[in-house]
Image (cartoon, rainbow, N blue to C red):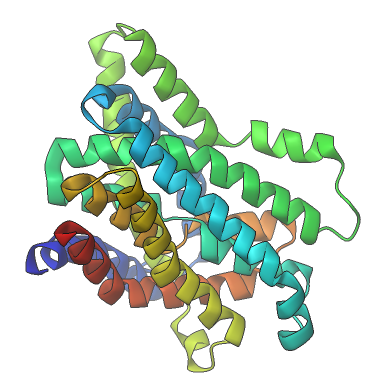
Length: 310
């Protein structure tokens, strides 16, 4: 437990630093919007390319990890959709608010997961996390873009619009390019690898700083019921489902711990960007992200430590 917390501490220190910088040195929203775009469209895709392309996928239980995490995503997505009528009737959750609830319960903060997996297990942890990247990022982006297009739009979406939003997603392209390079063992020139590696490394620190800059602590004075439910599903139910599926596939030790890590991280910070761009409830999304990030400091070490002992 102490080792897990020690690995998480630098990650959350960067998030806190982002929150402090947002309120002191860089108060202008335009600064963070620019950084967010650079991270989302350039730096983070480069990290995905580097992580997936260089991972020794043959040395890790590819099918077990991928199936457990993809299965957890699908089960949680189905649960959220099943809760839609209840949320509407009991808490008057409209379409845009439901999309933020859905994103909060299903998506994962990849910056945090990669940083923690690398701190805990080194190169093997990154290789295991690379499997999670391939299994979860394309699937989650497709599902969440569809949910936003279907529930946030006032009119039923044109399938061409949904398809274009998916095809243009830079995170999906990062996974695809990295996977092709890994399978083909393409001999890129060393300067090209160094260039991609440097871009990817810078994405972790900047990405975590932007997570902190997006925290809205004042909104937690009276969190909405839907915020609490989304947070519970993401930080408690999702790890339980993923770890249970991982055990069913025969995974133990570091593999199960990385599954717990990837399933127990808070939702992705770019969920807020997606909510703004596609008509979701952005204020609710910010509240969910803030509550999940703060509580994950406690829940993540517990989930990872328990999974490590199974």
